[in-house]
Image (cartoon, one colour):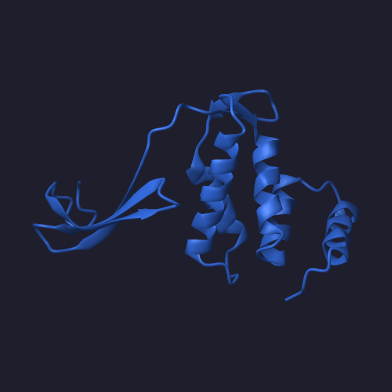
Length: 155
């Protein structure tokens, strides 16, 4: 494994432990050249999953896109990286559990929103505003009203 610090290809595993309910192996590594420690994750290579976009195009499922989207929505909010990674793991598990090798981007977005609504109201609204592409203030206000009716606390 190449060291992210010095870019030499000589590191050793210091610690290994299961993560994500045993679906992932988390490894702590140490570069034998510079001593830098870093973490890697090993997971089973899954059958390619295609996402059907709104325009009908298909692209390979990419968990990093989900991660980046949630990170943007959670910027400057009390949602830690561990929680964001947990959300991405849950969404990916749900997507793969559906079966088949294709899923719509709308279904993925809904899975994310179903989780975010119970994590942080502001993060949920930020994500919803991009995902649902509100056409005007009335649609945005309706989403806020629906959220308040569900009894979520406001920060």
